[in-house]
Length: 264
Ligand code: T3D
Image 1: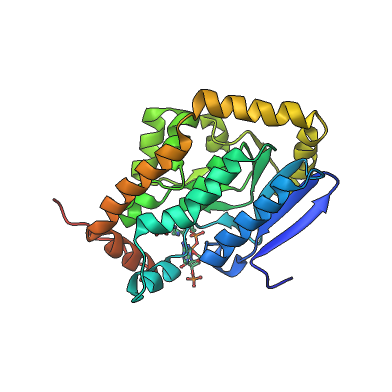
Image 2: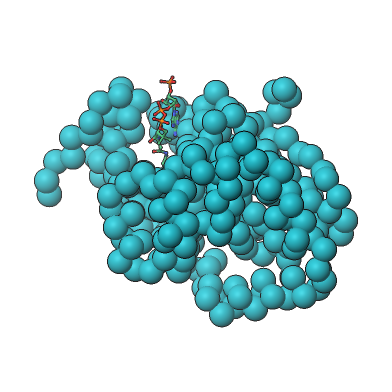
């Protein structure tokens, strides 16, 4: 397998972008986020691409921000704030996903966590293997759902169920995700790749003009303030990151122990 962090493959009008850091459950470092942004930008301007699939190599979709990389960044003399990092990476990524005039489909093979799940939620459609597991995970490290998830989650499943998942960081399986409306369809794990391509191909063969304008219309009707919301979300996240819970949560995760969050 290539050592590139992002793999690209074409089948007819469907472009598949594969997150390729399987040894890290496809956790995002900056190289991976920027490669995904570049892959999506290329697809946006290539009229022969009619649908885009994002998937993960190995046993998961993505474990979200790479927390070892996060600690390195936090300890770096040139560190940037969490809000600034969101603006430079995940907010650009999910804005692009929402703005591309083509179907963007997340194919969930295994775990989708943190901003990995946020990325999937920003996509237009989600197809999941029957062994997929979804978890927000942010509350376990003192953060709020970012990458647009604080908007996409209640939009997709409602306020109460969204808050329950965000606060608890519960892991939910594919069947529960389907029942809640977080994923469009569930297929046997062994068939995910083939079924994803067939699923994407359905939308690659109708009018691209209708597809693009329908996406714009739906964005305008239910996500009219998506970009402005990302900025608000980054501000809330900066406030969360200013306290001690973030480093306690991340350190606890890396040390494989339960976090100890003090009352305040
Ligand atoms: O400034 C900013 O960038 C802020 C933005 C933040 C955005 C975010 O995404 S914050 C949320 C970050 N992600 C998480 O908090 C998830 C952390 N991971 C987990 O909760 C679990 O690992 C999973 C639910 C994803 C998977 O659980 P499981 O039991 O299937 O696997 P595991 O044993 O926990 O993990 C397997 C390995 O992957 C393990 O390493 P090892 O022991 O085999 O060497 C684990 O440490 C590593 N790993 C998993 N997630 C991450 C990770 N390493 C770095 N970063 C990760 N996110």
